[in-house]
Length: 243
Image 1 (spheres, rainbow, N blue to C red):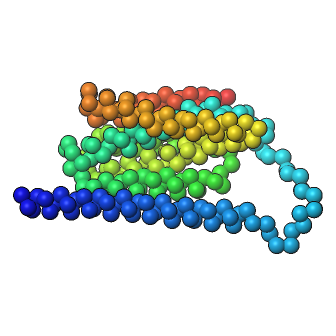
Image 2: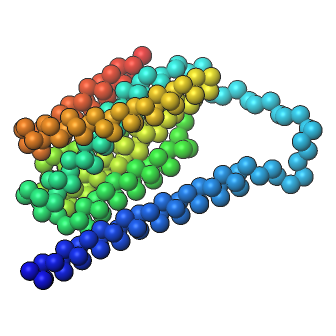
Image 3: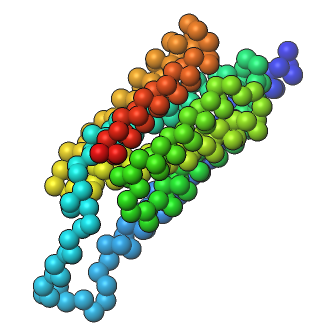
C-alpha cells in the first residue's frame, strides 16, 4: 500500500513538473515575441519623420481572385483533422493495443508541431503555389497519408511518420488559410475574424464528434472519416484552382 502511494506521488510530481515546464516555455516565448515586436517597431536612426512616405508598389496579388472562402474550406478541414488527432490519439496510444509511454506520445506531438512550424516558416518565401492545384493536392495527399498512419498504425515509427506527414499538411494549409485571408487587405480584418472563429469551432466540435464516433464504432472510424473529408475538400480546391 505504501509503495502504491509513493508511486502515485511520483506520478503526480512528474505531471506537475511537465506543466511547470510548459508554463516556463510559454513565458519565454512571450518574452521573445515581445522583444521581436519591440525591435521591429523601433524607428531606424537618422530617419526624418517629416519626410513623405514612399508610395507602395502594386502587389502582384492585386489582380488575383479573392479566395478566402476556399481557405476556410481547406483550413477548416485541416483544423478538424488536427483537433481530432490531438483529442483521440492519446486515448488509443496510452491504452488499447498501442501501450505507448507518455514520453513517446509527447515526442510524436512534438514532431508534428515542429514540422508544422518549419513548413509554415519555409513557405513564407513562396509566391503562387496557393493558386495552383498540384501543390495543393500534394500537401493534401500528405495529410491523408499521415491520418491513415494514425488510424492503422500500432508502432511508434509509424506514428512518427504520420506526425511528419501530417505536420507538412497542417503547416501548408495553415499558411494557405492565413494567406488568402490577408492577401487582400481591404477585407483582412473581417477574414481574420472568421479564421479565428473557425479555429475555435473546430477545436471543440471535432473532438466531440470524433469521441462519440470512437465510442460507438471504434478508434479507426473517425480517422477514416477525416480522410474522406480531406479528399472531398481537396476536390473542391482543385476544381476551383483549375479554373
